[in-house]
Length: 338
Image 1: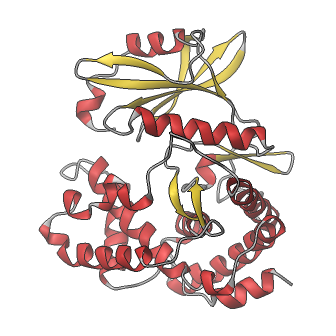
Image 2 (image 1 turned 135 degrees about the vertical axis):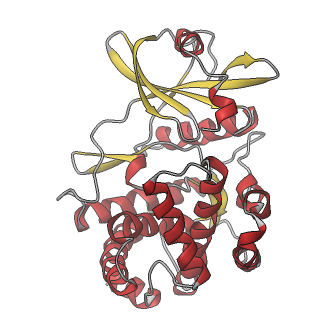
């Protein structure tokens, strides 16, 4: 979290936020603070997830749009958390902090547990269920009507203004990133390939329970091509498990992952060969946006050893045009559909 926002946050603010939903924050457990403050709190002995989003990160309209879609998916049988109403009957409560504010919400806690990339459960059965859940979300979203609360398009996101966060030292990366963005903007948008997506379905944003995936953290949801929701699981699975390995090792694992993922995805939704050929552009987009997010969020003058390693690895690949994986995506799609 940016330092100036940290100065606005306090225990009193957390307690006031929890009280809006009748929850007890006396033993609140912090779960995250990268883009939102996320805590586990309790009500009647039952755990819930309390989230505080600063107004510099999302507008109230953004948050309302996120919750409208989440509850729609929940009502249609997708394993996503229910967004609860406050004591005043609102999905979103507002806590003012001077000229800014925090938007507060309360989610049901997803059942199950996270699966580490080092866990034995991180296998083809999980990958297939992961793909099936993603495909189900896309199929159901085709009929979703957002009304007045619509998530922003992908290319309207603040992070897409690369030069805002990257310095002149990265001028070549900025140039490559802008070219990648324009390539994706030229792709045809249809109801079959474009809609609201989660945009961040990696192992840190779902639990595994009784053989099923339960997805949460819809903060990055946006209007974008469905293909991105396939690219990002592939990207993070390879990156977290083999980012220090050579391209050949990353690609070998990437092929096995994507084959299993698509087998599940195709049980729920379709994917044309012509579309999967665009996968390299979407994987590259994640490289650029992740590199930019790190520059936005981290103190570059005081990086930890891990942060320095992540940034250097990303920068080296971008400068040398080395992809996350090098795969025959059409062949993988055909194999998955057999």
